[in-house]
View 1 (spheres, helix red, strand yellow):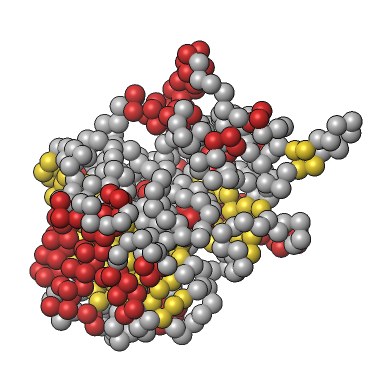
View 2 (spheres, helix red, strand yellow; view 1 turned 180 degrees about the vertical axis):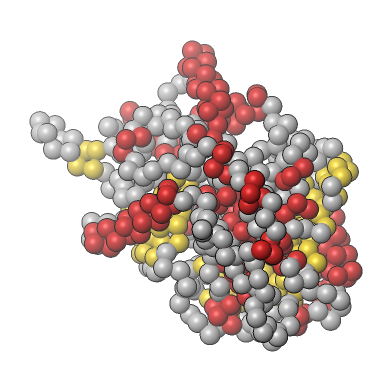
Length: 545
């Protein structure tokens, strides 16, 4: 198939109506994971299209957390305060300490100088809600059913239709209906969050900022207070999913903040400082989730036009200011040596922002979608100016925090994360993971083991980069085409065909496919994927008897 035949056809009224009908059908099918690729048969992987009943478990919903999580016997350590600062769509290359040259991020850079910078750290998904589910539960998001950004319950039919079909006519040039909805409408009650676990040993807990794990406007069971947080203030969903409601605890304070959201980075920062100051006499867990630099990128007036990176750059520099305020608060209250602070992002950059030298962006299984900054600071416990190159993931926060708090892991479920405390202290330099897995919506696409990363398939929407319109057209899969010399029956696959194998130590940009040179490595990587997939299909929630 020639490049020309892969090109995008003019959008006629008839074609528009046809595609609109396809989009409507996708909305109706929702979480079933509809595929619009005519070459779907080329994908050897399995879809994880479980029904909602898989994630409804009244017996476990009612089970007290203390029944499955116990304190470590004889634990005598001092339990640290823990702060997770989570940004939204921050790119690997946006920060000065990660090589960024455009924006000024002195406070985050200083945090890196004072602690440890991870070079090979991943979110558990390249999209907002799934990544947050993984972080809070220590489990791959697919175990929770949160496989796609959870949209507000008040989402209108027309908005769903636009979301499903819009990219067919836009600059992305692809119709991607594979996972138009999450398999669940919010984080299941049977999942045990970090906050719920830490409360067992007396932690005070707060979630401040963007939640995005269920629209509690209509479903109160998705409130952060139902998932272990003593205090909550923030948005129930993403800041571009209007109406964007502002909540405090279990009360809707503002029904729709609208487009003028510039004040809220400051609001979230002030709320975080107040929580720290009123909780300083007991161990606390603060989950501070900034709305920025997620589109529409509205900075406060004092940061407008301040950066050399446009509105997105302005919001990142405002987040940097916020980090500085949190650090000043810890110093002012004498809490620095008692507090572990982690700074990271939920996934890579979206349309704007920098993935650095990495390939891909938000929503993609390439490094630019999954690999994110992680900076860890704890004076006296984590060496200043240190660097960690061991592959790790945000699911590792859960077992690490549990260990620091003197808690055993839950006895009734698989926890996919690993304790990375030895990486943080420098006592260990090798990853505790045999492999890390990469998902696109409800499908397992790739795996990393050591220096190798393998894809058996890349969804058409994200191949090869998001703005390559000629190669990502409706109903077609780039990389599936072949060269057919005239007068012969020979078919030679294009260089872009899967499977893909990259040596990330030499090629973090995922530019050179080595599958032909190292076929045995490819087979071993595929076997890792099949093994995980087979176990998952037998027991998707990872329950232990």
